[in-house]
Each structure stands twice: as structure tokens, then as C-alpha cells.
Image (cartoon, rainbow, N blue to C red; front, side, top):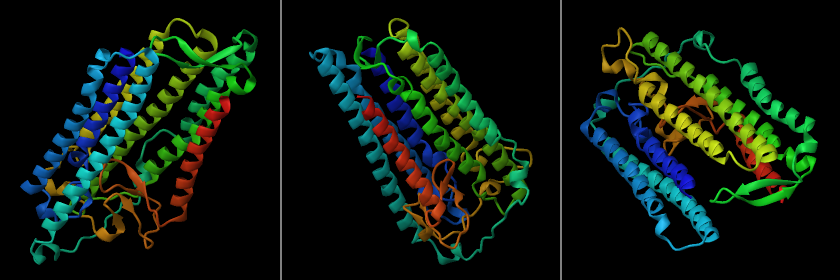
Length: 380
């Protein structure tokens, strides 16, 4: 029981912290997805909103985990307790997501209203778009082939072992463990049930590959004040996050391969090692994500490089109409040929939903989710 509690507590608090600091690490010129004149981005009102958002979001995550600390006082049997924890965890995360989004809309609306009171002279300065035509050539990232074959290798080795030693696999394969770390659900051995998890791993490869590709290839946005410095920050930012994407892909496939080998060969004992591996996975992936977000900011705005003497060198002065950003997070611009663009709010890139390629990607994601669900149901 406490193992599950620790995992959920870490997940909920880390998620709350990650979401809470999002306005602090996003583009300075577009707080809560609203484009502002450069001379107003450091306004005290904006700083106050971002801090309040962080306090409220992190605070609700702390409140959400309090019941998990006192769960042992409930007089419930194991089955009831497992059901309660499952329902509560889903409910807590759902409430956390809804709460943070409503807060985001609240502060976004306040900034839009404040923006309308600014003098018209503040918007008289015309912005310009600056690009570095050699930008993607200068990027030093993990190749797409390495990204693909590394995952396939981690999937193939356990599958080969399963095929070679198929006769040694027990007739019943566990697919779920209770809080006492005993198997409470199994399926009969067959090639279908044995290779089910590696099948899901194979489905994940194109999804992870696409996420990596979209991040690397997304259109850059540079500061017109110091384009070379801005380009260098952006390059360092993307290279660091590219390595993180690769780490996530490798660790995710490794974790699933370990779980696969454990379920078909070990089953009893060493469960603590598996749990330790899962906790280590969460700590590394979530911790690295938070560190990179705070250290680099969106597109490297938080970095301090030689020659970076002015705050304005970080600002790219978003020249896109606010109308092209739905709620500041969904980009829809038929006049923009780019498929992948940098986010206005948050870290990373997003899709231009006015392009057919973006909808193809969305359909692919839905198909992956459906295929995973169908695959899981088929096991039973």
C-alpha cells in the first residue's frame, strides 16, 4: 500500500510543481499566452499573477495528497482499499488538471483586460521577424536513426529471450499485482499474451519518434535585438531537450522491458526491485524535466551567455495576432506554412492546427490510444 502511495504522492506533487512554474519559465513576452509590448513584460502585475498561479497550483497538489497520508486509518479490506486508491488518484489528478486550467484562464483574462487599458502608443512599435537560415544545420542532436534503433534494440532483446525460453514461461502470466505484492490477476500463456507488452512498446516507437521530430524541426523565434545571441540560446535549449527526449524514450522502453521480463520469468520475489526501478524512473524523468525547464526556460530565455547584458535580448516580440492562438495554447494560422511552432505558453513546440499534417498527427495519437486499449482488453 505504501509503495503505491509514495508513487502517487511523488507524481501528484511533481505534476503540481511542474504546472505551477509554467508561467515563470514560459516566454516572457507572452505571459499566459497573451502578447504584450516589450516594455510591459516585466510589469509588477504580471509578476504577481505568475507567483499567485504557482502558489495556488502547487498548493492544491499538496492538499490533494493529504488523504493519501492518512489512508492507513481507513478500515477497509485490501480489495476495497485498492479500489478507493485507484478512484481517488484518478479524481485527484483530474481535479488538478481542471483547477490549473481554470486558474490559467482567470489570469489570462485579467491580463487581456489590463492590456486593453495600455496606451495605444505602446503598440505603435512594429516588430520584425528574424530567422537563422543555418539554425537547423548547426543543431547537434541524436540522429533519428539512433533514436529509432535504440528503442527497437531494447524491445528485441527481451522478445528474443521470451522466444528462446518460451517453454520455461509459466502457464499463467500475471498482469496485475495487489497491494500485498501478490498476483491477483493472470492470463493463460500463449504467444499472444506473452508478446502483448512488446507489441504496445512497438506502437510507442512512432509516437515517441514523432514527438522528437516535431521538437527538433519546429520553427524558431529569435529576438530582433540580439538575433545571434538568441539563436545560440535556442540551439543550446533544443540540444539539451533533445537529449532529454532520447533519455525518456530509452528509460520508458527499458522500464517496460524489465516489467515484461519480470512478468514472464520472475513473477515471485524481487518485487521491491521493480518498484524501486519505477520510482527511480519517475524521479529521473520528472526531476530532469523540472531542471531543464528552470535552467533553460522556453527557447533558452533563462540562459545567461557572454554579451547578454540587456533584458530585451531575450524578447522575441511576438508579432503574430492573438487571434491565431486559441486560449493562448492552440495555434491555428492558415497563412503560416509551418507545421511545428514554438509554444507561446509552456516549454517545447506545438502544431499549427490549420495544416493537414497536424490533424494527421492528432488522428494517429487517437489511434494509438485506441489500439492500446483494445490490445489490453483482448488479453482478458
